[in-house]
Structure formats: structure tokens, C-alpha cells
Amino acid sequence: EAQVTQNPRYLITVTGKKLTVTCSQNMNHEYMSWYRQDPGLGLRQIYYSMNVEVTDKGDVPEGYKVSRKEKRNFPLILESPSPNQTSLYFCASSLKTGEGYEQFFGPGTRLTVL
Amino acid sequence: DAKTTQPNSMESNEEEPVHLPCNHSTISGTDYIHWYRQLPSQGPEYVIHGLTSNVNNRMASLAIAEDRKSSTLILHRATLRDAAVYYCILNSFNKFYFGSGTKLNVKP
Image (tube, rainbow over the protein chains, first blue to last red):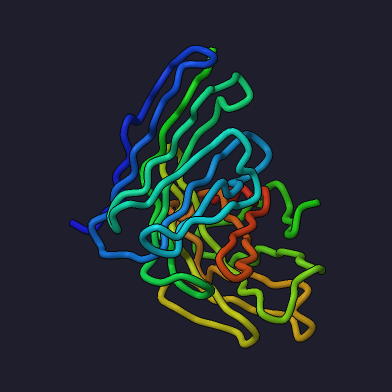
């Protein structure tokens, strides 16, 4: 089944403790992206990747890192999480980069930073 | 500032058409307009997208104003399964800018 998977689905952590949220897609998609969703704000793009080893900042990249060493994986790294990073996070992928391609979203990761 | 603005909520009767509006007055000539919807406890799901011309697919139609400063998502016959939050999005090169979404309530 074609899908985007995220792990973990739920995470409670404390301020300053480094964490990684994994994202994997099995559709051989070139483009992958991370979003955070907060009440009343819709989704905001954190980082995106056009292909292996090619990443760039989205609208709200502060406090986050990403890497794209393999085409299928695009982990989101919070090196020193803070309470304002408590949010619902979505990973997405699409066949190609650029405009006009449908994005497929993962099920989300709910992160709470105490 | 938000690149797209949408009404917070709308209501429709089942089996009737629904027109969901979106304003994007700062759109540039190469920006695509996308619509996604999100059911409770799920990730967003693609609905439709377009650049300049109106578009139709099995789920919906997208009407784009001639000046491209606004667009309307049209669900031709709303069903209870269409109750969701609908997002209007500007896609500028590799970036996606979501609006805050319209919560659609469908009454039986």
C-alpha cells in the first residue's frame, strides 16, 4: 500500500531533550516536506526537500533540522525542544518538486514538550 | 500575513452544492492554487489544484477568478462524508502556504 508513515505518533518529552521524528514514504517520491499544525493557524511549512541531499527552509524553520540521506526518509530533528514546539506535525511527499503535484500526508505526530 | 483568507465555517444541506470561497490577493503569476481537506484525526487529503483555468475532477471543481485574486471550491452534491476542514493553499515554487481553513458542516 502506497503510504507515508511517521513515528512516533505521540510523544511527550521535556525541554532540551533531543528528539527525532521519522518520516518514510514508499512511493519513490522526490519531494518531501514537514508541517506543523496549531489551532487557528492551519498548517505551516517547516522544511522541505526536493531530492536526496537537497533541503531548504519553509516558513517556520527555527528550532528544527532535517536531513535527506535516502530518498524514502526525511527525519525531523529537534535538537533542544521547547514548549512552543508543542504541536501536531505532518510529513508529506509528492512525486516531483515544484508546483502542481499532489502531496500525500502522513497520519501526524502529536508532540508535547513540557 | 496570511497569503490566503477563508471563512471560518460554512454549513450546507446534504445533496446540495457547496461553494467554498478563498481570497489570495497577493498571488503571483506562477503560484498554483491547491485545495486540501482534513477529516478529524487525519492528515490533509488532496482535493484539486489549478493555475489559471477552471478545473474539474471526480471530487470537485475549482473556479479561478480572471484576475486570480480569488477562487472557489465547488462540491456539486455535498454528502455527510464531505464534512471536514477545507484548506486553500498557495503553492509558490517548492513552498506551500496554507490558509486557516473553512470548517464545513453538512446537515442531513
